[in-house]
Image (tube, rainbow, N blue to C red; front, side, top):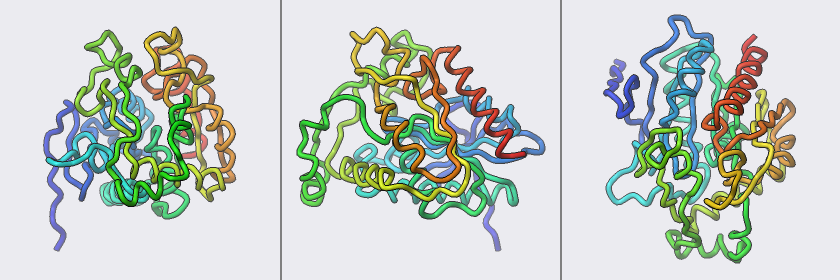
Length: 308
């Protein structure tokens, strides 16, 4: 006997949510009557799903929209959790896989598109290479975290990080505010409303276990993956410092190294398309209107080709 799935009202109007193991699955209530595909959005570090405009755009493309707040992030934070702490990128892959399976159960036979941002894009790339969902038809990576912009990591003895993670996994290796998040926040004069406790301008400390897990995943990407479905990789035209003194804080990626994305994207698999967005910020779908429209137009064109 199959137990009915119960969805509750979400914190974001127009959405419903339900627990999914250690994660939380969110769905848009405004769904196409006959969707041509389903899409699963995967957030990044110091992040959670709040991107209503992206969801409405993808719904308008005929897709049933879902998002996953992964373990120790956003809606999935539990008492005592250390935000975003993992010891292996496969933990995030577990959450992506569980969400994909739940979406497939909601829409049997429909193709699935995964849209993943930043560290979620890194995790989704590893997942899509190692253990993709049978329904997976395509992968969109919005500024995947293949390397970080800036030089702070050079001050960490990176070769010692895996050993350090084994004995002191929660040790803080770097802690700084996110001027990028502050720039986005409507309360600080930005263009987007979100929970500043779940995506915080104060930043989330980088801990040894998380850094070791991410560096291992980045090394996998550098060696080359085997993603067999079409992949769209989006990035800004340039990277710059995450500083309030940066005059291009609102017009370039101040979190990840776009040069690393350009270099490594072809190693993801045999069917990779890259789109470069002039003036785009780290999360391209949260850029100012002109670059945001360019990014969404590139996604729409790619979807038309992949779902033809």
